Length: 103
Image (cartoon, rainbow, N blue to C red; front, side):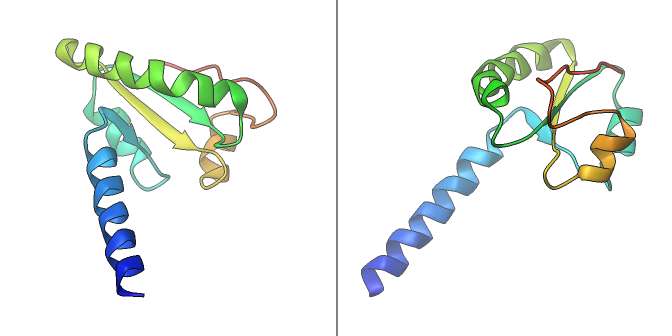
């Protein structure tokens, strides 16, 4: 049983490291407006974790975020399954393929 706890602890630590290394900022309704106001240019992806188009875009979006951070262009993502009100406010529909807006 202790081996399972150690493995789960290591997995959680690794998952935290992977998430911390992302140049894509995860936004919520509480952070969205301030993030957009604080940055001159933001490309935001409104996504659903189950969406095939979103899954295919994810590695390219991460790469773009890393490349564009040198030019001070921020990439962000909003999970529409967790932030439905925010997505609805910005006319993002989980039924349609993603179309990232730019601010």
